[in-house]
Image (cartoon, rainbow, N blue to C red):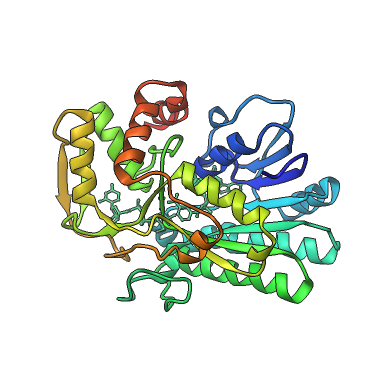
Length: 328
Ligand code: NAD
Ligand code: UD1
């Protein structure tokens, strides 16, 4: 574990970020910068060791001041507009967030000669696009099909190349489809499993784009947090890019069946045309991550069950429900 460190997590009030905060809070001082466009304060624990700034990472002057004032040991760059479809609707605004703001952070570290122990950028499996090669290895061909994927790939390269050029220890992850507690289902662009769980829980309609045979490597957020800590801690990860997934693809039709079993009722599924720019098949080769000692502890059945229990039994579903009330 990272201990007694100063850690910046941009996007830390969001889904993955807040699960990471939960794991790191304790002996560390954690700073979260989040504009709450998708994240929520309800996702964050109350702690004197947690310092929250409701701010956009696109404010370069603010970020520069923060980085200089805190001299962070570790930086997780998670803030983003995470919806592929949203970036197709708003390519210019989302480019400023998903690429330019992160480049400004790297520039500040370089020009101010900040001594960061490691910086991690959250890229995406979306960079592989629709290339036929499966599973997707880190060396597989890149085919970014959306503004989201283009910005993720460019920022991933900036992250790794700033590391090499200016001796900043950096690493990048390509998350596959993360799911679990605190994923915000309030937007039609939200992650499909948050929408499906909402539909199962509240018996509301679910729109299925395409025939449901598209596959994704759905990885449980607790496994993703495990990977995020491992990659930050191990020196040999510096300068490299890692897939984070389970190594298995699952179709949406299979996921729908799982939810029907867990929830105990049929889902109200409406079928419509496939989404523009949608990827048909995707699953990860996680050999590189596995060599570091990572194990995906949750199969899809185990992960969905744990997720479902968190939604129906404990308080970690508050963030999800609050969003629903606020916006819906
Ligand atoms: P999320 O939307 O829950 O979290 C992103 C957070 O960033 C949100 O809290 C949002 O409010 C914040 N944010 C957005 N714009 C901001 C801005 N201008 N300034 C400050 N904060 C801002 O998404 P997530 O699923 O937690 O994703 C975390 C990261 O992982 C993102 O970079 C995403 O692109 C990447 N990723 C996620 C997945 C996935 O399946 N969830 C897969 C691949 C990559
Ligand atoms: C997701 C992430 C993206 C990440 C990528 C990595 C979100 C919002 N997006 O994109 O950040 O980089 O994984 O692989 O977390 N679908 C439906 N009905 C719906 C919503 C979605 O049928 O209401 C379908 C989509 O058409 C798609 C699949 O479900 O085929 C997954 O969609 P989505 O959850 O939006 O994820 P990705 O586009 O794979």
